[in-house]
Image (cartoon, rainbow, N blue to C red; front, side):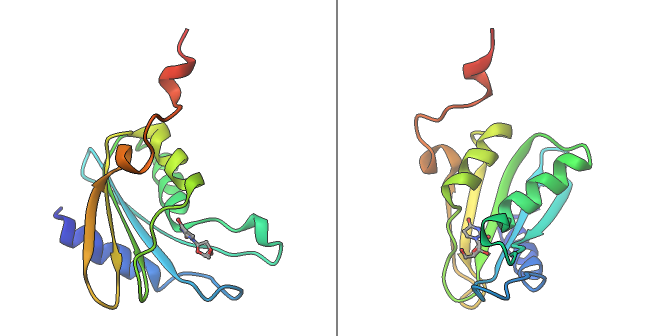
Length: 131
Ligand code: THU
């Protein structure tokens, strides 16, 4: 699975976004180390705080199907890149702090690739709670 393919997979997921309030569609596709991919889109709610981001939809779907180690996630906005929010950075960090984050815009097809550890330096994670 190439970065380009993962990016395209996130663009497909973006089409499923449920965004009646913000109309800001986000798609994600996370790549497990076993090669499986899991898509996610943002799912908004009339009680705004109950909204779930695309990245968390993807990672929760993956964990539900037995994947807990990831090598990369692609996240796309429609017109402009949608960088993962702080909560999503923390949730991704829970499973694979060194995964690559491919972030771009569906409309332009352009993306950047960074490490999650660049987006969430000095993170607090599972290792901090080990006895
Ligand atoms: N959103 C995501 O899906 N991922 C992010 O990391 C940033 C924000 C969504 C949540 C909400 O549905 C919309 O973008 C506007 O905040």
